[in-house]
Length: 76
Length: 140
Image 1 (cartoon, rainbow over the protein chains, first blue to last red):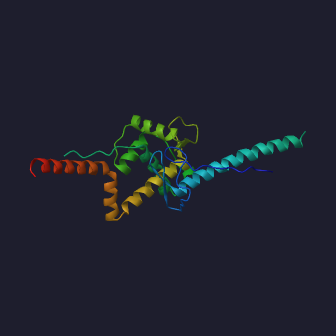
Image 2 (tube, each protein chain N blue to C red):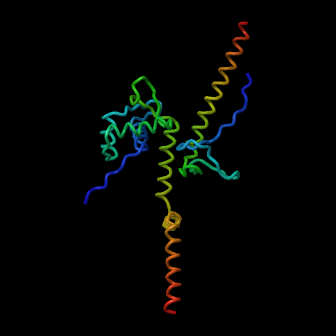
Image 3 (cartoon, rainbow over the protein chains, first blue to last red):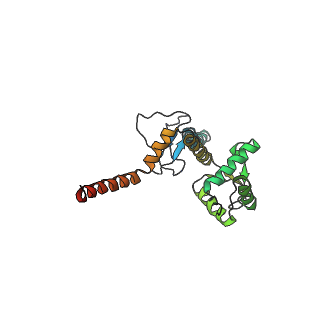
């Protein structure tokens, strides 16, 4: 089964807008990422956790779709 | 002098969930709280906040709209709500920010104060400059 690659944007936990920052910026556990839209600080680990959950949901739905297609082919 | 009453925010509701998680030793998936009179008294006991149920409903609406809280079972609009990953992240972010603010050095605090009030400092500088100019014109 081929699962396509996904790009998940890191979103502000407070306003939901995509978090933007300098390209060379490096963050580590415990850091706060400032949202340029609402000015709130986002806990790095929590932002990653939310993105991970979103990624899992996306992969799940694609895998389900593909599985349905495969099953249809099998019982044709 | 009247005691300043702490105003409740939507974040206080989220914090109540995290407190419940920690006191129960359960993760966010296992904790469900209804927005009702029990929450009103829990907020009074834990945070010393007086709030009406109507006000609490409005704040719960904000939490639901932002997907910080979610419905877990069929229990009405405000019954048995659970904290989402985003909601937990909001609480953790605020805790982390409070931690960072509390651990600032005196120099950093002064620097932040100037940064926050730079408009005031510019206005003050302008007043001093104008006063100096006027003094020079009329006296000197």
